[in-house]
Length: 210
Image (cartoon, rainbow, N blue to C red; front, side):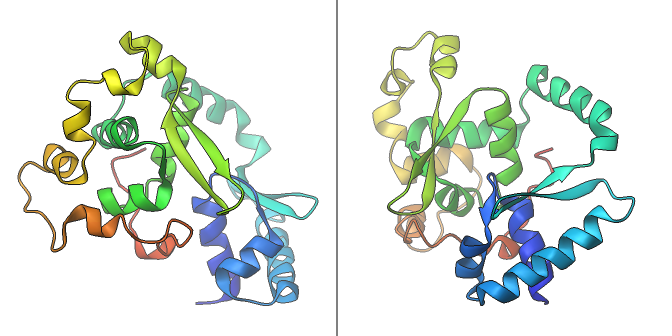
């Protein structure tokens, strides 16, 4: 797989703009090669009739919808904000409520799918927020005050059975009642270094999350 396609995959799943330096670090590539690939990708995506464009602000890059489609995108996002949560979104929100603050890498491991789009939708609805840990160069997700106010709670610890479901094994059983516990248990998977997320291309995007 080419460097350009790897960069496109990273930008697609990222919830925030990525710098050329960060992309080079993630892909173990030379910064100059990454910048050349980014320019090629930008020319390719922005020079044709496509629904996705590559934006650049200084040294940071992010994928965005085409300005020509802004009307239908705004309508869709409005529906997303007011519409009901899907089952995958409810599962992800439950994990964040009981285990947060939690990294996207740990969320992906627990659910077994790439949760990037679900996280975006939950942030659009104002139910979760991202907290940056600059030392570890990662983000942690937790529920918002709006989420707590909606449920009439003062803090997440007031959630039903919080002390019980805050444990990895119990939370896994709640979300997967018909599944057997994986070898080593979900707590073993959660012990992966938080600054070493799984390869975005190795996890499927949840087909039911959009």
